[in-house]
Image (tube, rainbow, N blue to C red; front, side, top):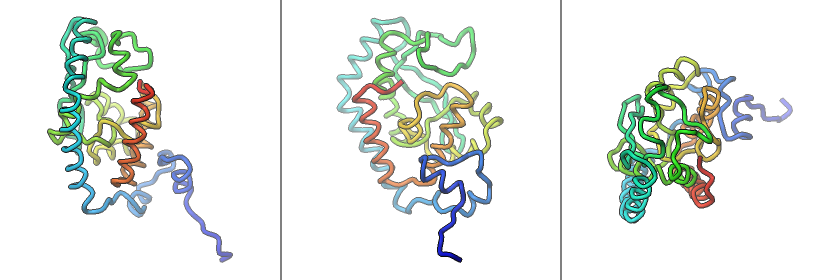
Length: 234
């Protein structure tokens, strides 16, 4: 009545933090909230950009691929590429490609374990590749195959997806978006190696899902370039 605009705390938190307040989230808010509805041209244009950029990336980085392959073989025994099952769009599983950064059979005695900062399983060259995110270059193959995008939530392993689905509310919503090589959570949140970290990263993933646009994707890609150039990866 006094001309003051009133908004929900979830909306205010979102504007201030760049993430969605998961603890205060309610189903009604998801239903009636603006967002989660990109323009009709967004997905076809995004797929076109993904295909062109991934093809160009593989073509231009071919000499770098060869150099990295040699360094990995000289540093430790095992294959050059690392293949691992991940959960993608609509919960569909796919095989993700990366340069191997850990010693071979690193989880043989432990089973699935989250990677963490200063992980003792990481090889010498692997640490360098992770720091500049060069280990993720082969994921351009997944982009060409239509399993990933350049920008989107980070795809997780089935074991952890099942665990996090039980512990974190609305976790399954992140699978309504194509996973990406980089994303809003990846450039803003440091390292995810626990349920608590996954909870925090989901808040950024939901923010991305709500505000998806080509402009937002470009902003994330530019932030990723800074991370790569200054070696701020994990």
